[in-house]
Length: 235
Image (cartoon, rainbow, N blue to C red; front, side, top):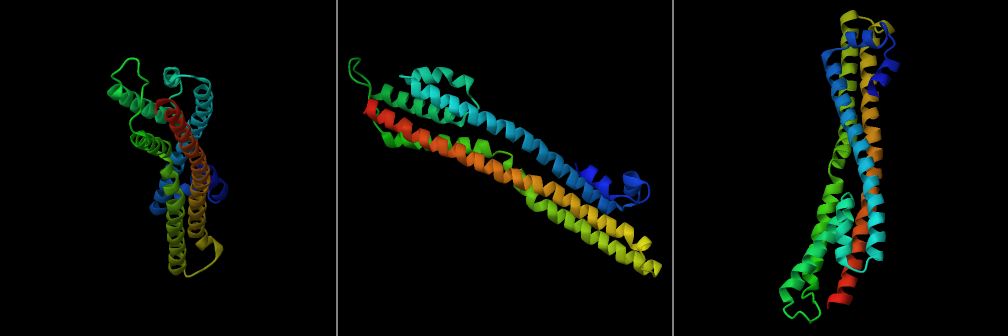
């Protein structure tokens, strides 16, 4: 993507290959760094896009199964097929806590199983939800880093190119276009490359954050629903 942008702007001395041959090592280093940022960002964008779509789709499926089922054990049986859903992690934490409390306090085979502490169950659900949000946010922060750092890296290349242009003016004793064109071209292309890396990263960082907030809200609602069912049936 960035190389295409560079090729479109580097029109002097035989196009892109000629332009690269005439740029200084600093400008080349800036462009390489921005290309690395851009490639890593796009790999994260593609990976997290598929991951979050799968997480949302499987969460919808899991909720349907959970609300149709009459026993937690039935829901637990399908959790292995819906591992991408963050609701599965929350449910399994709650299911484990309920089982532990019921086994500990259930001594009479004829007695109703009872959950002794809803507060402990709530803490288990909150802890599991926090872990799931952390998992969903993994690698997304790199997009924020790219969005904030890339323009400044490009700006460094801009300043360096302008400095080169003024240096060429001083050495040649002339300010005509042929003298300043290489330095100005370096300045403009590094600016454009920085923006090309930063803009997609910023857009998708905000978009993915909104998707993660939706999934986080689903987890909060599910935890409350789980607690209501436990309170009705195990207290």
